[in-house]
Amino acid sequence: MMNKIEHIGIAVKDIKESNELFTKLLGVQPYKEEAVESEGVITSFFQVGETKIELLEGTNENSPITKFIEKKGEGVHHLAFDVDDIDAEIRRLEDEGFTLIHQTAKPGADNKLIAFLHPKSTNGVLVELCQDAPQ
Ligand code: ZN
Image 1: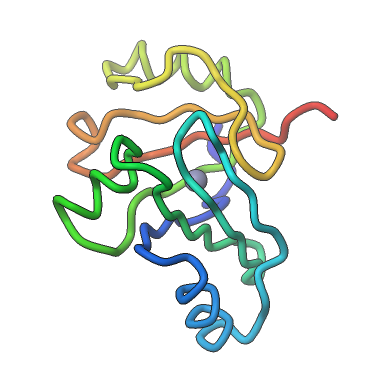
Image 2 (image 1 turned 90 degrees about the vertical axis):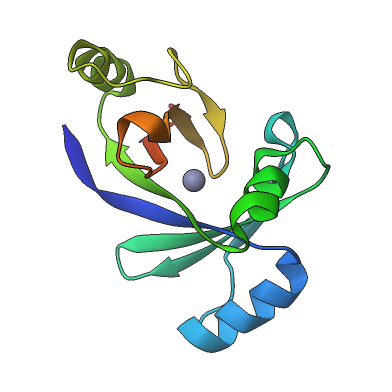
């Protein structure tokens, strides 16, 4: 079951500049900055009520974020839904005919287990599932 939008991911060219911009926009500082080396990204997170904004900057030219910005420019990159049981949700979505980028959950930023759906099966929207990682 999908509980809520956990965060919205936004692709940016320069996370330092964007941290300043979003601090002004949202009126709060990012509560965390974290590199995810397997994805070639640096992330920062802002808490906005129950939801978060995740900024992502690519750290190399093969990073999915660098490629996204080359194609589409900066902007909304993905929607992340909070789920209780990511493995069950992956199986449910596969049974429904969605294409998963990750068939099994993997560690993501901000102490989450994550999996992405391919946007070709979701009207062009990149969807992330995330579950709090067991501590
Ligand atoms: Zn995300």
